[in-house]
Image (cartoon, rainbow, N blue to C red; front, side):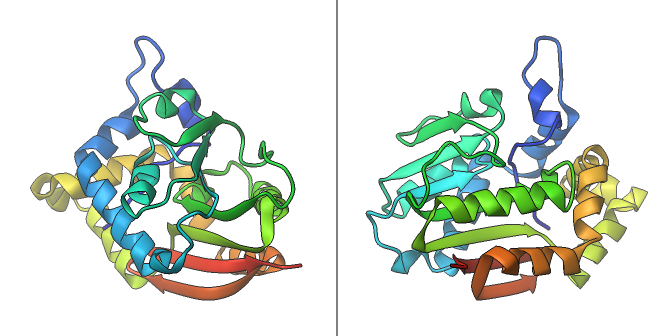
Length: 233
């Protein structure tokens, strides 16, 4: 089982407000420690080819949340790193050297052809409206990427493994026996609309991503869609 912490949907706009306890955030903290998440992101980036990327590449992680993906990039030796997230509360939790910007990924605050690599780890499935918001986000990503740039996407995908995880989440005994299963169930409950909207439209997503990016590497396994591509020019 796997989950991602990123922002960009309406849930994150209220997180951190006085007297407001966010159930999703509390569940995520039970699901995975920051060190576990950092290790996961580091290994994932290696598997997606980060060892071959130039260490002086200008990299932006979108929907970066509290910044463990940025820490993973630093751990891998990258220094020109930026993060973008809609939630100022989450960005305030980041402690590192990367420049972080509060912004909407549908309107990126960067010039045309200005970045080498754009990364999203678990943010696209929080977009409120599909396909419109996804099309706008992809369009902005292609605009910002240099002609030889690279996009890296990792999102939930309804593989057999994820179907089994969903069954476990619906089982009362499994939730009692496993804190991780219970935490995942709570997260799904609190993002159900956008989560199910995303999982129910795989053909649309694959068609739309190819409108803007040419795939170099793509897998659907263990509940995740991983995509590495170059901008269509």
